[in-house]
Each structure stands twice: as structure tokens, then as C-alpha cells.
Image: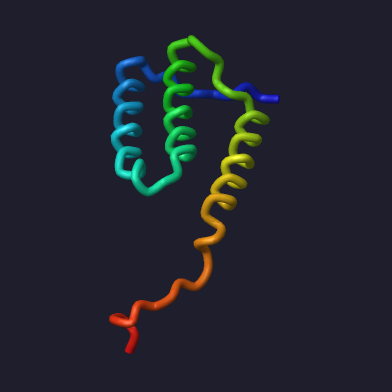
Length: 93
């Protein structure tokens, strides 16, 4: 098995990237379930801590498990709103 190769990013650059990701997440705070925003913030913090050597980055199987659980969570959270949406009377001809 090959070792994962991650580009070396210095701490200040990664700090700015993490700050940019958090700023980009701010508009979604009002529209997304709290667990989705929390999961995204957890990913940012985990990556930053991993780059600083404070905690190991997740392995392949943990990433796969997290992606599957997040997909199931999104489907369970948003499934009732999928489908054909009713047309507003002002827009129908």
C-alpha cells in the first residue's frame, strides 16, 4: 500500500485557508442543519490540528465511513423535501 502524499503547507498558509473555509461556511449556518455545519467545522479543525502534528489525519477507512454516514445523514435530513415542488400560482401560465 502506498503512503499518502500530502503537500507541505506551512502553518500560516493553512491558517488562512482554514479561516477562508470558515468564512465560506457562514452563509450556510441559517439554511443547513447544525450537524452538517458542525461536521464541516470539525473537518477544518482536524486538518489544521493534523498539520500542526497535534493529532493524526484520519485513515482511508475512517474517511470512507465518515463519508457514508454523512451521505446517509443528508438523505435522512432532506429526503422529505425531494421531488416535484408545487408551482406558485403567480408563475403558472
